[in-house]
Length: 607
Image (tube, rainbow, N blue to C red):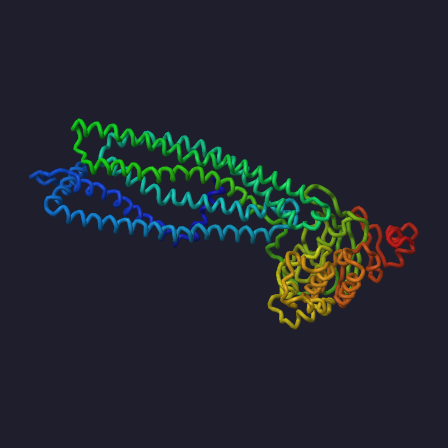
C-alpha cells in the first residue's frame, strides 16, 4: 500500500484539474439528488386525491422536515393550478437532468486530464530513470519485463487511480446525501438497511485479497508474452533460417494461454462483486416494499405514493455508487500489484553515478592508465585480474585473446559502463570516477560489432547526439566513412528511413553509417570492438579504409579477432583468462616461440 500511496502523491502535480473535477462532481451530486427528488411532487400532483392543507402552518423544524416539506407541497398544489405545476415540473426535470449530465461530463473532462497526466508522468519518469541505470541492471532484466511495466503496469495503475479517484470524490457524497434522505423519510427502516452494508464490504474485501494475488501473477504473465514477442521480432531472421516458426508460435501460444487463464480468473472475481451487491440491493428493495407497503395498506404511515416511489428510487440510485465504491477496494488491490513493479524499477538506484564533486574535463592530453584493475560481475564471476597498462595519446592499442578472455569488459571500464572492482582507470592522472560521466564519454567514440541504428533517416542516424550539426558536416563524415556513395543510391538519399535496427541496409552499410556517426563526433579516443568481424571481404575493406581514416590523429583502442587488422598497432595487449599474458608489437610477439599471440596468429592463418 505504501508504494501505491507514492503513486497517488502524483495527484499533487495536477491539483488544478483535480480541484475542478471535484467541484463539478459536487454540483453533479446536487443535480443528481434533485433529479430523484422531483419524482415525489410529480407523482403526488398527478395521482393524489384532493388535498386538504392543515390550517395551522408547520414551521421549519429539524425533527419534522418531512411534515414541513409535505405541508409546503400541499400548499403549492392548492395555490396553483395542477396543469401549471405539471408544466413547471416537466421543465424543471429537463433542466435538472441537463445540468446533471453537463457537470458529469465536465468532471470527466477534468478527471481525464488528471488520469492521463499521471499515466504520462509515470511513463516519462520510468523511461528517464531507465536511462540513468547502470549496464548491470539491463544485464539482469528481461526487456519484456521492462516494456510490460512501462506499458501495461502503468495502464493498470491509471485505471486503478481512476476508479479510486471517483470512489473517493464522487461516490461518497452521493451515498451520504442519499442516505440522509432515506433517514429523513424513515429512520428506523433506513437504520435496518444500513446493517446490510458491512456484509457487502466483507465480501468485497475477500474478493480484493484474491484479486491482488492474481493481478501480480497477471503482470508477470503479460511480461512473458511481451518478452517472447520482442525476442521473436528482433530475431526473425534466425527463426526463419532454423525453421522454428512453429516452435515460436507454440511458445507464444502457451504464454498467451497462461495469461488468458489468469485474466479469466481475475475477471470472474471482479464480475462477482457487482452481482453480489445487486442481489443485496434487490433484497433491500423487497424489504422496503414489504414494510412500507404493509404500513400503507394498514394506514399506519403518512407516506404518500410519491414519497414511497422516491424512497425506492433513492435506494435504486444508491446501488450504483455503492457498487462503484465497493469496486474501489478491488481496483486498488490490482493497482498495488502493478505499483509495486513500477516502484521496484524507480527504487533501483544507478550504480554508476557522478561523485558530488566530480570534475568536467575538456580533452585528452597525455595518457590513459589502467592500474591494478580487477573486475567481477555481481554474480561473483571474476573477469579481470590485476590489469596494468598505459595508453599514450595518439597510440593505437590492440587487445586480442581467445573468446571469454575479458576484452570487451576491459574496454567497457574506460567509458564507465562498469566501475572497476579494485584498482583504477586514470585519464591524465585523474581517476575517471572523479570525472563527470558526460565529459568522460564526450571524449570517446565507440563502434561495436553489433551496429546499433535507429528506425530513422540515414541523416539522423549519422547526426545522433549532434542534431544541431549542419548537413554539409554529415556528408563530409559519410564520405570519410566510405558511406556517401551508397547513401546517394538510396530511394530518398540521406532522408531514407532504414528500418528497425537498420534492417534495410547490409551489414557493411550499417557499419559504415556507424563509423560516420563516430567521425562526426570527432572524439579524441576511439574504441573499436570487433568492428569488422561480421563483414564480408569487400565490406571489410571499405570499413577498414574508413577506420584507418578515422584513427588518424586519435588514440585508438581496437578489439579484434582478425589479427590482420592489428598488425600495425603501436602496442598489442594479449589477454587470457582475465590476465595480461603478453604485451608488445606484432613482430616482437611473433618472434617468441611460446607466445599465445603467435599461436592465435598461426591458428588463424594456418602458418
